[in-house]
Image (cartoon, helix red, strand yellow):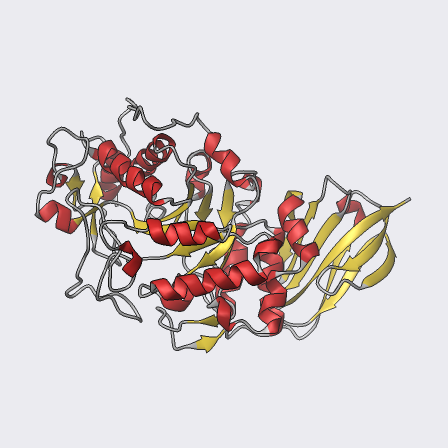
Length: 455
């Protein structure tokens, strides 16, 4: 462990000199926080297609979003992992004989057998143009580091005056679960230039969002610094999502000053223990919920998932309806980014209703002062406020296996004495309450209230 810590410390050293491209805008420090003033909302291909998604499937999900979700604030379409591998597989990764596609500078390019519009060196620009023509935004996933193939072939780094890929890498701290890339030594000449060349390319393609994997556990501060500088120099507003968790709370100050969103946990799938673990870990992250920088609950594993995914067979989400309400209630009141993981054209009416409730999404967009009142004995209460209309939001949860639990909150803890109460998911008025508010909840269930103070 001591050796690893020393390596991590060494990798955290970064160049302080910042160069600029004359043809590009250079964004000011912390300007990136303006690009995600509310938590980003979109679709990601991982839960349903794993590392095998194809262009026609991406377009089908974009078309669905335009028709059914865009008016509710959903806007990002994200192509997840390994879009540059021609022969990847479902249920994991082909690490035996992957056929990578990359350019002469060691930068991955879309596999043409999966993304035919990338022909003639166009990369993702035609697909991004299609997404943009719908009034949506386009995102991609990459792994941190530099491709092993680029290192083995000693490919030149664009803009680095003859420095080649084999001069900026180390095998230390290589990703444990996917061996495509090596770690970049952040203090080596050429390291910044490599990330600069990536984001120069992505800006040319029209990328609006990037999810970068294997950054958070362990926390790769050196590469995150390189990435932040590269984005700020590329001239395009690219929202940065670091992944996966568990991001260490000790890195909270750094990640919140370098990324727009960061994962709190590993992948969240459609089993109840994933939800309770998420809610447990989230307890330490409430103070860091802020405009432009968001603790991230991960993708929403609802609807039809794992068509060709990593976990299990093609299915509708295994979570019960009560559990799905609980997940969506928590994600929304916590103000997590919302990235739906299911195949959207396969949505049923219930799944769609969870994504389009206008009162819930207004809370997600406008609320402030998110805090947990308690989490004890399987009972959880989370509250927030809407400064625009004075509403107080309150989410109550029974995350235990007990068939019925009474969850009680004193109105004094909300700063009021009397209130009119509305159930936000149903829109039904509950009536007036004084002194306290209580709900009897079944196992794994929840309720979401809007309170209006009365004199």
